[in-house]
Image (cartoon, rainbow, N blue to C red; front, side, top):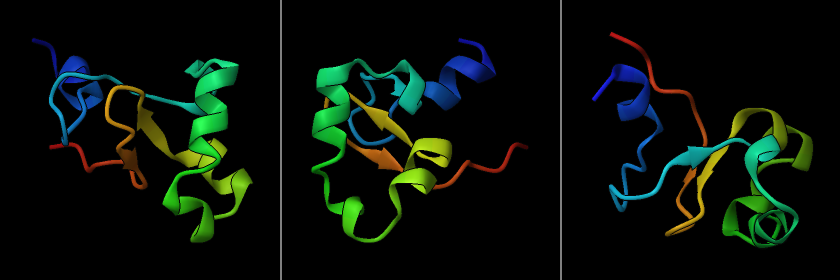
Length: 67
């Protein structure tokens, strides 16, 4: 497995792939807008920086440090 594949794997369920806002379909985006992090972050910040697993709905709020 390459480093990129490992970074994209969901740390919570280990099965899903973390995807950016642009990679989510309309239905998935509707779910994301209802997740608990909606109260803590602006929509613009979440769309530009966060990634989600559509399998378990884990939300990654920061990019992990490489190395």
